[in-house]
Image (cartoon, rainbow, N blue to C red; front, top):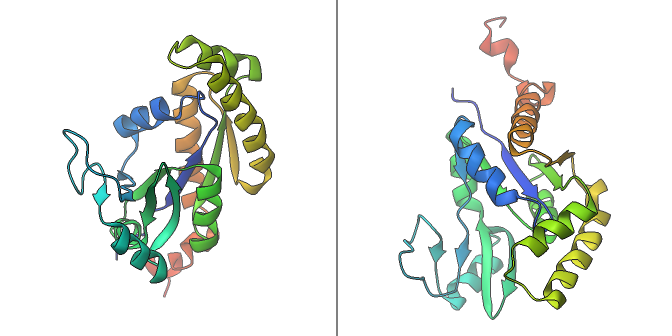
Length: 202
């Protein structure tokens, strides 16, 4: 019998380096799948249905909400985005660890709908470093930078809702922290209730 995988949710303030972390994890994490969201927005050039997103209509998305087919969902600029329950559960049942890049709001929805998930909150080395990283992008106005920093302060208030916190002072260290968390979670007794049978004790 194949052992189930984990649902690993990683949240972080903008500028913390979450995208870089997830890209690095793909190179070293075993049995890793990246969650594919369902969205109502029109595909952009080069995007493929089932690879980048599951594209659907507003009507079908609403039906997915009504039928409890989404673990979490939200709207942004007139379109809806959500995490399909069936895709996640199929991956987990096949033994894959599914990683989700989700906002704080979405993470708490996931936890409510999928209690077995592991919530990881990633922080920068300091608030000043976060400010430096966002500013050094050179792509946003001072007003947007201010909004992102204020949002980061609001998000950290939800830290106690998470299972683990890691500091991204170095991407390799952060990757090792995530891998250590996943490894430890898989050794928890309640996740191994059938271990006696698996080892032939009965």
